[in-house]
Amino acid sequence: MTSQMPTENITTGTRRPPVRRRTARQFIPPQHGAWAMLLVPWLAGVLSVGFRWPHLPLAGAWLAGYLLSYYVLQAVKTRRLSRFRPQLMLYGPVTAALGLLVVTVRPQLLVYAPAYALLLALNVVYARRRRERALVNDLVSVVQSCLMVFVAATLAGTGISHVTPVFTVVLLYFTGTVLYVKTMIRERGKSSYYWASVMYHALALGVAAFLGIPLTAVFVLLLLRAAALPRHRLTPKHVGMIEIAASALVLITAVAAR
Image (tube, rainbow, N blue to C red; front, side, top):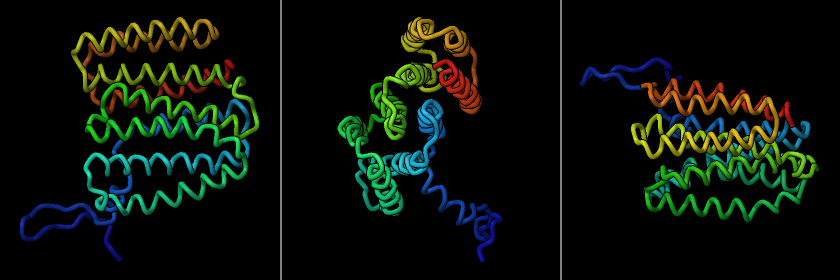
């Protein structure tokens, strides 16, 4: 049995991480912010239309599909398919099996296939150019995630008009989050990004005000956060913690106000 404790390298005196932990990390992307973008749209759709048992395999296919796409794009970016073959061999069959089950239950879901194919193709283009952090590519990923609201509704046999307001709120939030997080980390100090973020959040507030008073209050807070926090030096960890709270607040309010 392999020990869970870190091992000591006798020749160098350095400490090595456990083999098991090092192996596990090979199968989990270091993209912590992606999990909110995966879970919030799924939850928003499910909570809006009511849970059905096929929503569980949908969640599995959705998460496995994200993991598969991440390593596919890494392979495209690095042009080293063999390096990511273990991950592709794990997540590929899982995604295919769960996806087939969901589509068998509700074949109408295939209507979303062209949209996802196009959006993934754009991701591939940016990966090949090693520009996966580009603003447009981030916004493409936002659209991919938010479409899950419609997918969850269609799987339940509910018309997408029923969840369009929820979809709109989730899309407004994550689009704004892309701009805001850039002002906090990668584009920190750039006035162009800062003002684009503030102006976008002001516009999103106007849309939220049209949708309802509770949403107005939430988007006022999001506007204040976009305007004030970039003036302070927060660590990525603190930025992430704030966004976890914000995404939960948006989810609860959007579903309650529909």
